[in-house]
Image (cartoon, rainbow, N blue to C red):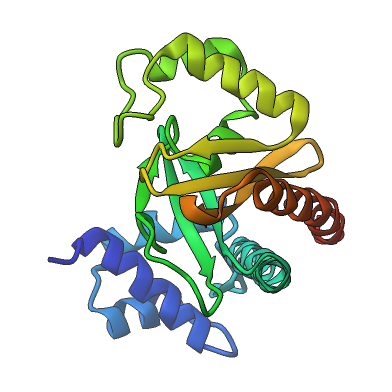
Length: 247
């Protein structure tokens, strides 16, 4: 069921958007069937927040709406840029490459690029995995200090396999290593058959996302793991440089 107060605001903004020469409060009320007594405080709030502007008793879309649109476009551009390099990473490693962000102790998977020989893995676009287990999660957690990790994960770590990190001191040591080396490695912690290497993506000193390569254990020898790590570290610099131009 739709939330009616929110729906009213959307209808108001749509009417203002569609009125090229502006629209009066009376006209908005008539077209949306919203009483003037209800409409007035909504328009006042939207005006204060710069989502609409009032000129000669007519309402127009404000710059707040454009800022939201620009923010959406920038994030879309960011993902498009990263995904274009994910394809190059896959072409060099011939393994699955995934993009994730951090959300409340979890990794949210945004994108995935697969080679033709891809094997089934636990995660997929739109799903979440515990950050304490996934290489992506450990790469993302490198942005936080030890105190945050201890407070956030003590007693709250998810266990997927016998290899999953569930000791808080071990997790903190792993994150310290990620901060130093700029990459994380997961040995069968989310799936016993998969090894992952991940890197944090940083723009202006802030971790915005992380990239990983997933390797089936039967191909995850030292040589292949190090190759995937080196490819990720190479593209880390390339992607971060490309993204810095969007700021």
